[in-house]
Structure formats: C-alpha cells, structure tokens
Length: 136
Image: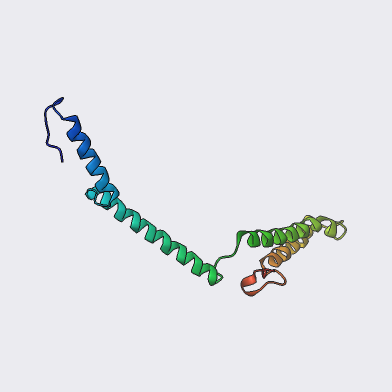
C-alpha cells in the first residue's frame, strides 16, 4: 500500500513494486473486496444459469417442450390443409349458390366456413397425446 504524497513526489520503484504486489495478490485470489465481490457475483450468476439449464433439461425430458423443427413442420402441414380447404370453398359452392338470395348464399358460406374452422380446431389426424405429431 502506498502512502499519499504530493504530486510529483512518488518514488517510481516503490509504485512499481506496489503494483506488482497488488497484481500478484489479485491473481492468487487475494485481491481486494471488490474483486472478491465480483467473483461471488459471477459464481451466483453461474449457479443461476446452471439451475435454469437443469430446469430446461428436465422440462424437455418430461416432454413439456418440443423441438422447433417438429412444431414448425406440424404447423406447416395444418396450415397447408386449411389453406386448401378454404381455397376450395368458392368452386365447391359456386353452383349451389347460383340464383339464390344474398341471405341464402351467406348462410351456406358461413356454415362451410364454420365447418372449416371446426376442422382446424381438431387435433391433427395421426397425432399423439395432446394433439401433437409423434417424432419419427
């Protein structure tokens, strides 16, 4: 530890020795309170991260999480089927709705749209528990 001296009165060799001693103490884990506090905070952060990683691993083991690629593939299949169903409505009902009143056409189309939405809300065919596709 250096004693405070007026500006320009410090001995360069004494300052160098103090800096080296302080650096060696810090490397050996014998630094000042701030470095010990930083180390303690780093250890606490590491412990929190390890706990979070373990929670995630356990959740995956319990099948609470699914791989993103599996979910994406399943959603693409569901939306592709739904898109096809919706796009088929005009052709399917064009002849049925010919020469009908606006109210009758609306009723027919509304029933078909409700049926398509009901189909969308059902679990995907071939799905496992919870309505999810089984991984192959």
